[in-house]
Length: 280
Length: 292
Image 1 (cartoon, chains in turn green, red):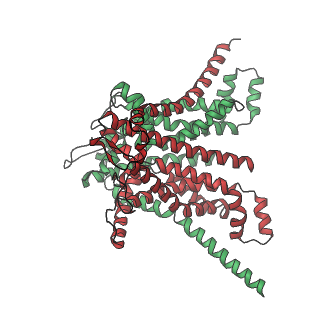
Image 2: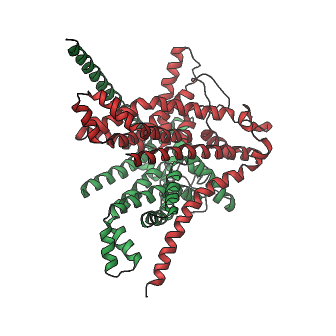
Image 3: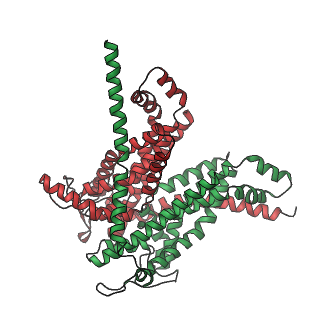
């Protein structure tokens, strides 16, 4: 009799525990839905063709827009990718090729640590490296700061996908007498192509919303700018400036920009996910 | 040997980029250390023990920011842990397949993808008024922007990291161990309590360390809701400040050399601590993976 009641106590306890786990894990929906609903509610009315095609105007004037922020963000992402993609892939190849070397362990650790460096630190370091010598805030410095944040993501994803390729592929290529770099670039890297691309897209999604590294590098600009040596505006910077302003009109624009930014980021990350599902 | 030149170039490129990758991280430390030299040599250790931050009169005491950073990060870990662990158990043990799992893991990925500035924006308009009402209700100072608001938004932000990390660790617990426990008649709670947690303990701890270092360095969302008050406060409902948020706020306005140097020194400290905590977490997970 006693054993039976003990079992039922344990069963009841188990049920409570499982219920609690389910309850707590469903709490994760709360912030996401709250953020998304609120943002769509506030941002959708602000999104319009005018918003996307006009420059920012003073409070009170019509047709205020965020076109320079969109262009600026794209330029910054382009600069960052130009630097981080080749360098990241090369570092990834090093991690894959020289597995035994002691230096590879150090390099891998450096990449992991670099990924954890706070973004504001990246900002002030690049300020010292690029902004001070050039004596001006610039799109170039912003792009470099973002590149430093992309680099570890690309390097690690390149290494990890290359690790999945069977070594026999490379050996077969080498046996045919092709040079070593051809075996690596044309056989291993190409077979790993979609994985590497996934890493690149995810790293773009990661930096597209970064604000802190741009505060003291890209700095922001009221006007349209295509000059990489001049300050430039980016969507996250605009959101930060307008969100903390006291004007409701600007806050509305910031919601529109935030919605646009998040749609861009979600599109990238969901697109990549669908792509990798299709591959499987 | 027609390709010898290209081969050499290839080796050079790969080696060179590897050295560059290591150099970049080392230069982070060197740069910040060099920049904080002025403040280091003139103020010494008292920089960390004084509580007054008054740049106009050249008083630089960083204690309020050390306190604010540590408090908000610890509180956010504490707040996020139940949800993060629950999600990790849910995805790593309870529900291994199906649509619900897909839904949850997609949610986590989306949550992780929301930029920090948007978290801050949302928190400023939704979370801060809620906290203000709570403060009214509790007869606390009704600022709204406060240490509590910052901790709450930090907690939401680190849940996806802590959860996806712990999930990975939990799903690595060998099936034989779990099956053995079940065959002995263990309930699901007992499997979690006596098999999964003891096995995955240090793996989960390393996930907590990695999330903690993320919380320490988080900037934009915190700076938007913490109130940026450069003093030590003992109520969670009062505004405070963190290191990262202070740098974001004051770096552009820092005029004197000493002011910039003091901010750089705080940056150096933040880099040092986050990298240290991160390193510890990475070491722990590496050891754990070797063991299992």
